[in-house]
Length: 223
Ligand SMILES: Nc1nc2c(c(=O)[nH]1)N[C@H]1C(S)=C(S)[C@@H](COP(=O)(O)O)O[C@H]1N2
Ligand SMILES: [Mo]
Image (tube, rainbow, N blue to C red; front, side, top):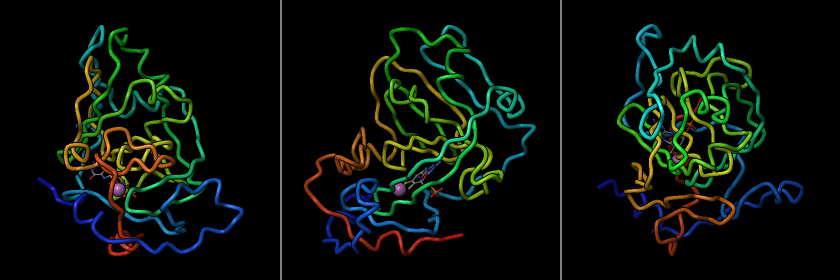
């Protein structure tokens, strides 16, 4: 059992003020940073793009794997969004480029009974998202950030971006998308964090009775 949820919610945060003009964009209990923290479990994976693929499976008409090149041949979109990490940092106006799930998933024929998705990622990470949340216009599998290819530490070659949920749902190093009939919980969701994770409702923990220290994210790596 990973005790991050317990550790984080024990301390009481004192948050710096969010500038008034930004307050409507910053969820409660968050603070804004210009920097880009790097957070993940385990070590950064190294890939040979030729051996890399993204597998779509589960409740689909026909399971299929996409090479990186095949993903690049699909319609590409750019989104600008705010991201909110459960450790209390938010970063505004981040720009990502990639493929919309709403463009990708129809290619494999998702069965109508499928309502839930498990995102499978390296190293040994998974996170669950309702299918309808992935169908939003600004939910993408991103391969570029701020006009450049993703860096290794931010998820190269491919990561999910789900702007409207806490950032742990935005899995880096995504390798598989599993369509499911029933919800199953992913890694953090099994370890004390909320199964849905709406930052504007402060859905941080599975029981949400505690608060997180404001300075948790200051102690991670940056670029
Ligand atoms: N594969 C993988 N993806 C992951 C994680 C992880 O541990 N493994 N951590 C999540 C968490 S908790 C956060 S806050 C974001 C951090 O992304 P960043 O390092 O690009 O800021 O990645 C998410 N995606
Ligand atoms: Mo996070």
